[in-house]
Every structure is written in structure tokens, then in C-alpha cells.
Image (spheres, each protein chain N blue to C red):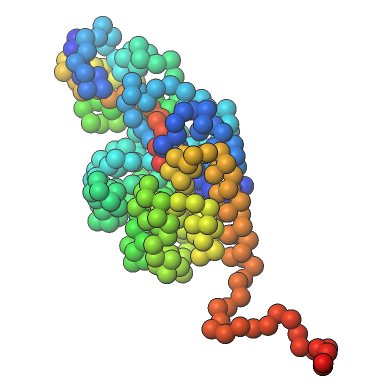
Length: 249
Length: 65
């Protein structure tokens, strides 16, 4: 199975970009080496996306966006594998249009089928630690909990659950969905996530390329902070300046 | 022969999936085909015969998160 991360721990979603030129600028500024794509009818999709991604040298992570059942998602994954010649798939099985949150039952069923079929399944899931563990136990290559609903920009609603997921699986954890700005991405990394997947927060920002650069730095900063080991939270102050040598007036 | 190509009734003069794809795009990588809901792998396109009324989906990469 190919490595998910190479140089960058930021996966960029391509959905929502106003133009291919804006998308290109965002991809370059983000420093990412993997971006998501959807599979759609060729007359609606238009040309140019895949040649652009090839030219930029970024890897393609196809998704199963828009699928509501395990059988539809499995079919979409198999088509994507044939089209893009990759075993990696971002598995999305959506439960309803209003929240775009995953249907856990269908998701797990699809994950089991695709893992048995040799896919590297990156499962878009809710922030439920038990479901995340079940997906990891089923052999998913990564679990991708939502911080908040797709496109909401609400950040990470339940950081405690993200940490519980981090602690309960050995598979990579990638915070997917909900990120609104750079501090959300940094928090995800500080919580111990191995990476983040960001689409709308970049592509729908007023200046996508500038936000992409912000996300790049946020992911790097959050990862460094996680590895550095933060100080414990205290109720009272702890002076950083020693009293030793304090003059007496 | 009449097929349903990406949701539209279409009259075609070709008889294989390969021929149908060639009429739509020069690209091969990044293109996937399903006929009547079943994936037709790229390697099977030349030999995959179309039949009257087949529902053919020709898909490619689109922007998506």
C-alpha cells in the first residue's frame, strides 16, 4: 500500500475552487502532495483537471462523494481505481443531505468490502471513537473523523473525541471536514492527528492561495507543537522568572 | 444503435466501449466506464460489445473534496 503522507501532512480537497487557475495557486501555496478528486460524467466534469494535477506532480486521492449506500460507494471506488490507477480511496458514504455526515452502518460495510478488495481505504467518519475503532479494526488505511459538518467551517466541535480516536487506533488519523481557518488545522495536529484534509476553508476563502499558505504553516506548527510536548494546564500561575537574586528595597 | 450515454439517448455508429470512449475523449487515464451499472475495466474496452439500449456512463475527474 502506498504511503499516505510524503513531505506534507496536508491533503487538499479540490472541491469549491472557482477556476483551475485559482486551484493551481492554492495547491502550490499549500505545499501538498496529494489532492482529492471526484468522479463525474465527462460532459459535466470538463477537461483540464487531471492534466493540471499531473503537471503539478501531486498525487490523486479519488473520493466517493455523493454516495449514500455501501453498494454505490463500492462501485464508485472500483471505477476510480480503474480511472486513476491508485488503490487509495477516500470513502464517503453520506447519511443525509442536511448534515452530510456519514452513515456509519453503510460506511463500515463498504469499508469491509473495499479492504477485502485490496483498497487502501481512507474512511471519512464521524467523531465517534467507537466507529473509528471499528473502521480501523476492519483494516482501513486511515480514519478521517469530521471536526464538524463538511463546508461548515465550524472547526473541531469535540476535540476530546478527536483525542480519544487518536488514542484508540494505530492507523493514521486525518481530521477531515469542518476546518474554517488556520487555528483549526493547528489544533487538529496538536491533538495528535497525523494530517488534515481541507477543501472549502481554502477553496472558498477570499484569497485561496493565501489561506492555503496559512494552512501549510498551521499544519507544520501544530505537528511541531504536538511533538514538542505542551506544558500541562494549571489552575494558578507559575512564574517564569525566578525570585533568586531579587533585590530588596 | 441507440444507447443511453451519460443519461442522454444517443445514436451511435460504433459497436464497442472503446469506440464510444474514443468519440468522447482522447484521454485514457482518468476515464472510467460503467455499462448497465457494471464497471468495464479499461483493458476490456476494445472487446466490450455495446447492445441496443445499454446505459453507458463515461466518467472522469472532477473537482471534489
